[in-house]
Amino acid sequence: MKIIIASSEEIAKSASRQYVELLKEKPNAVLGFATGSTPLPLYAELVSLCKEGKLSFKDVTTFNLDEYVGLEPTHDQSYRYFMNTNLFDLVDVDKSRTHVPSGIDTSDEALAQYDKDIALAGGLDMQLLGIGCNGHIGFNEPGTPLESLTHVVELTQNTREVNSRLFNDIGEVPTHAATMGIKTVMNARKIILIATGASKAQAMFDTIKGPVSSACPASVLQLHPDVTVYMDKDAAALL
Ligand code: GLP
Image 1 (cartoon, rainbow, N blue to C red):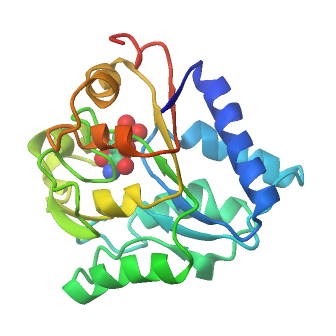
Image 2: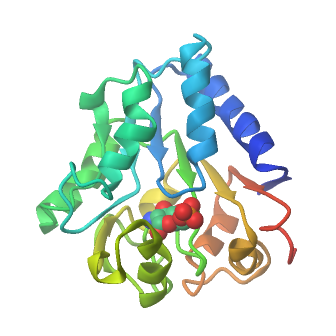
C-alpha cells in the first residue's frame, strides 16, 4: 500500500495525476468510480483538467460501485444522478459507456451481468474508493464475504443514519443497495482509496493496521498489489 497524507486539495491534484497518467498510456481505460462527498474535489479537478484539454474521457468505459435499491436513475439521491451531475455531464465521456448498477432491476441475472460486463470491457484498470465510517467499501458492509461479486446488501442502521444527511429524513433512505462485491473491487488492477475527516480515523486504522477481516471490509486492500491510499490529517490521526 502506498500511503499519502495530504490536504484535501492536494489529494485531488495528486489523485487526478493518476488519471492523467493512466489515460495517457491507455485512453480507453476502464474506470471504476465512487460516490459520496469524498471524491467531489477529485471530480472537480478532473472536470477542470478535461476543460483545459489535459485529460479526455472520450474513449473510456466506466463502472460505478453501487446504487440504492428502489431509486430511479432520475432520483436526485440516486448514484446515477450523482455521477451525471458531478462528472459525466461535465466531461467528454460517452454516456452510453458509463455503467451504474441498477437500483430497479436487482434480479440475480442483472447483478451477475454487471460483473460480466466489467469482464467483457476488459476488467477494471483503476477503481476509486471512498470508505464508510464502519470500513465499508462500495456498500459492502462489515460481514460481507471477501469473495463476493455484485450483490444486494441490507444497509446497516449506522450507514442509513450517516447517509440520511442527504435525504429529508431517515425514513426516505433506502434499506438496501446493489453493490460491486469485494472480489469485484479486488480484481481491479489499480485501486485508489481516499479518506478525509475525523469520522474515518478508526476505519482507516482498521484498514491499514488491523487484521484482514470482513469486520472491516476495506482491510482486504492490504492484500492488493497496487493500492494508493490518500488521507487527510484527520483521517490519519490514529495511525
Ligand atoms: C456511501 C457509499 C460509499 C462511500 C461512503 C462514504 O455509503 N456507498 O461508496 O465511500 O458512503 O461516503 P462519504 O464520502 O460521503 O463519506
